[in-house]
Length: 296
Length: 272
Image (tube, rainbow over the protein chains, first blue to last red):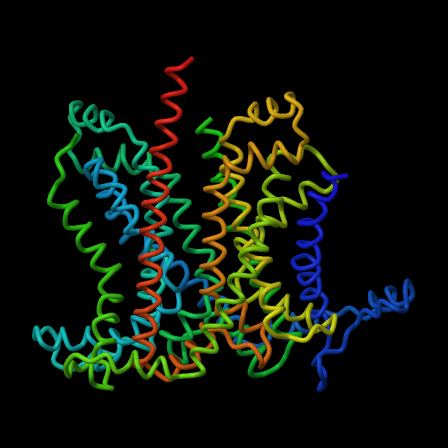
């Protein structure tokens, strides 16, 4: 009996507050918009039982999804989300790898402190970390002041409210997610392998390419997915740092819901976002699975 | 040990400068006298004073703390139960679906979690406010708790529990007296994680709250949309200070307890 309660309580909680709401999104994405509260016409009337269900099936339509494919705004938002998420993932890797590498090479007694320094920003409010860049990137911000002072530029650069600012924001906020898995892969690496490669005539650079990088592959893959997956649905960064022409699907969904109050279309946008996410999530799970099997 | 090269030293210096400079600038300029955030006009703590008199920020902070304490506590209980069921529960009907539901919210974009919960609350006619935000935060943070706790449960020796059961403990007592003390550090860090996730959340709270309950992130977001302001800098500095003290304290405590545990294990090994 106790075992039953132990299983049933978290189970039912998740069914009620995760599965059911998710099915409602699916259902509403197939409904029609209405000028009422809630602003949609439900297609499934549960009180009518089986006949209601049959009526529901016959009424199902993909109008909202067809609408999404016809309006270029949504199509562009999906493509540009993928593009922004992909570019920022590559940038994060380029910034994060040298840091993770240096941490793994650092003397043993430094490592706990370095690790703490990487984790600390992760505990700090996400919103504040994004906000801190607004003062740096604006036209009269610190970056422009600095560049004007050094004489590198003569007129201020426009960075805030462009895609560049979004890239910087994503790299900055998700950097710990990239560093940690790569660091844990590099830390396990046996240093004598590199010495062997060098003894056998490899230059340091080719030893790095042929030994270190392949051995940290699992960490690189994990880090990339940990950045790519949340970046794709990001809302805060494009809305604070991006401009009016920065199209990201999280922002579109938010506006569709709060400004246009078109719930069925917002739900359809959400369903498609999830369908896009399924591929990277499955690949990520496989990578983790493989890693666990190799560790055993 | 390989020599620590200049290349590594440079990448560490630049990397940590990148991670910490923005926050450092924010902290320094929260003590700026001028309202113009990018021009230094002298040292002043006036923005902290005006922040403490700003009722809307104080109200929002109080709402946020209530939500975070309630949701992280419930999430820790549910998450620990879920982890225990997944690691020790054996087979039961719908186990695959259960583990799917535990892991899915971790990768679910916040906008979708928020939207779906809002549709549920409206569908069942629940009035939105603090209670609905607590429900929403509990749901997604219990999944994080269960990941943290289950990784600890996997690594510890099952035979300790079995010994307790053989010696006549009831399953509940075995859990309370043997399992819980061992997994306690993971349960505590799970609670801390849930607490910070709740403090930090903007998107899910925006969807699931009503006009009566504005959380601090929602309040900050609406202020920040207008641009940079010295009051927000002051508020950010306070929040960064709290987190820094908390994380450093937690890491010192966990280091001490792991040293103590190692000492105990070594003593036990010598005794046998």
